[in-house]
Amino acid sequence: MSDNAILRAVLLFVTAFVTAAISCQWSAALQKPESPASNWQVDLCHRVETGPGSGRYHRITRQEVWEPARTAIIVCDMWDAHHSLNATRRVNELAPQIDRVLKAARERNATIIHAPSDCMESYADHPARKRAGEMILSANIPEAVKQWCSRVASEEPVTYPLDQADGGDDDDPTEHAKWAEELKAQGRNPGSPWKMQSPLIEIDSDRDFISEFGGEIWSILESRGIDNVILCGVHTNMCVLGRPFGLRNMVTAGKRVALLRDLTDTMYNPNSWPYVSHYTGTGLIVEYIEKVICPTITSDQLAGGDTFRFSDDKRPLVAIVMAEDEYETNRTLPRFATEYLGHDFRVELLYSSDDDPNVIPGLELLELTDALIVSVRRRPLSPSQMKTLRKFVDAGKPVVGIRTASHAFLVRDAEPPDGLTEWTDFDATVFGGNYSGHHGNTLLPTIRQVPEKAGHAILKGVELDGMISGGSLYKTSPLASSAEVLLAGSIPNQPIEPVAWVFARSDGGNSFYTSLGQKQDFENPGFKRMLFNSLLWATGQGAKEPPGRSALTDRSDDN
Image 1 (cartoon, one colour):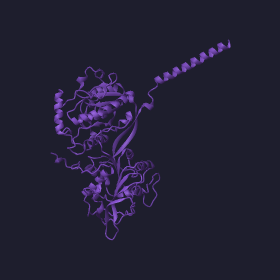
Image 2 (tube, helix red, strand yellow):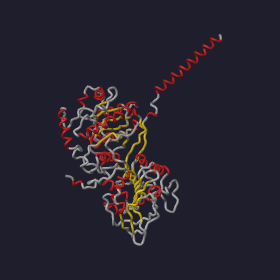
Image 3 (tube, helix red, strand yellow):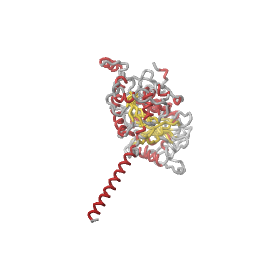
Image 4 (tube, one colour):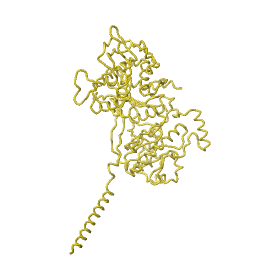
């Protein structure tokens, strides 16, 4: 054989070998399952009681990997019109965000089910409706998904957080009447004007399903081997919870279920108990679901980008961290939050663990928090939790401290336990303070307002001059030179001590601290007003009057 012939033979062999290798490689790529990198890493948020019967809950997040092909998103009752104008407005704002998530979910081969109840007639000829209607019904349709569900056993121990007996309409009466006339002019029934799903949400004719029937939807899930069910849409406290395909029934039927908590809304009227803002009402329902129904996730976990927030929801997020055994602030501070904060703030309550007092479950929430209230006493933390706390402070975010916050993370006369770390200069760094102990517990101080600070925003509407505090006088002098003292306290034959002050931190953040905060202090309206004012001041909201009614108001007072 000539050299040229040998060379041609070698080239033919190499070409055949490479072609075969490439062919095998492509074949393997086509046959292998979806790459784990394309799965969803979901952070499931749920609530766990701190201890049996405590009524207090830890906010716990656990991470799971969900395969999109085994996941369905059900869009609940995102109608094109609603009898409430405000509800319609919120749906119109929510719809494009839901559409964005659905587009991302389709790209990962998730199943999309559109469930605009009472609208099936409008979709009689739509391919997505026909696809659902032609589904062979599963032989194992649970009874749970065949009917509406108003309550399940897991809800029995927990108080439902809203009064929605009036239907939850939060419209201005004049606007509502005008809207009803507009609906009539469109040939719609003002009481139930919906005819189809919002056109702002695309329905993929080739892939999606349209159904309002629990049996059909269950059969879709079973036929596709779907284990994970995500619900979004409206309204959380009604249809999302109770429909045959809703959260309660899907959990009862055995699916792994999550609420998309930033892509939902409630029907709640702030003139009804617990007299909080509409968005706080939604938050209360979400918390309730996390306690007794199922966990929640957020849209960024499915589609990237930022989580959704309604444009007129301006409430700063306040985390209240409670880890002390002296003054029962794990009772007084939640009560204060219920009474004062439901209109102007989002609030998360974080408690130390009953099993390990140096662990504060949910502290990672500080990454999303706008302001922090600290009521902690001598609790060193793990390095990771201390890093989270320091990162929050270093970011220049506002801190409000009460009572033992001056020695929150400092062990007295000992080394911290192994694996834990102190923040020894927390008082000086964050509050400009200098706590060195306290006077006798029986020497109750008289509180006086610093005259030249009478006009400070934190003292607006506050009447504490001459108050006798319920706790001992802390030794806090001398403060940092940049601290501004608002209140001082005195006992016989001892120097006057600062009791409340503001401090401009070196990191650019603002802090307020008061050594008040004993249980009896929370019985004084002036103290609670000062604490409310301090949060308004810290978050830059300006002066406001506290709400006239709150969840503490007796529901029998309603007309």
